[in-house]
Length: 180
Ligand code: S3P
Image (cartoon, rainbow, N blue to C red):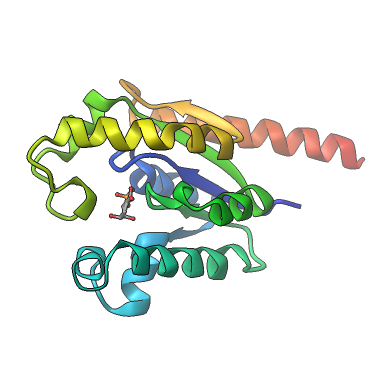
């Protein structure tokens, strides 16, 4: 049985914020993959990118994902926006988790991440162009990995939490019905 709930989506799509609130509501332990990596290696993500490069970070990310997704417990996992760039990660997410894609438009992401200095891939003169490029490159993979696509533009966090909660509740009900 898939026992993990996984949030995927572009940087700034609200995965961590929603993840914390939804895990509270569900009474599940919450893992943020980026925070897990920072804790494990005692370094900030931007430092890892600067000193060891993106490839090294991606290796750490895959390893962290495995460690988290291979746990026995039911947990809620928020991933980094680039997790779908490795097929191996997508396969693992699909195998172990019920995957929610938090879909945010370029305008929303741009307004949230203007001035952000913590995301190495977005340190660009032309932030909008960079977001559009990365998004175009990744959108297919997000959709491919997703069990549910949740549009987030213009919807409040409590409403998004409720939407995900209702999806999970309906799914659980169906499952119980099939088991009895
Ligand atoms: C990345 C997203 C970041 C972080 C790293 C790379 C990406 O996580 O993992 O900076 O490639 O999209 P968030 O999506 O939580 O910002």
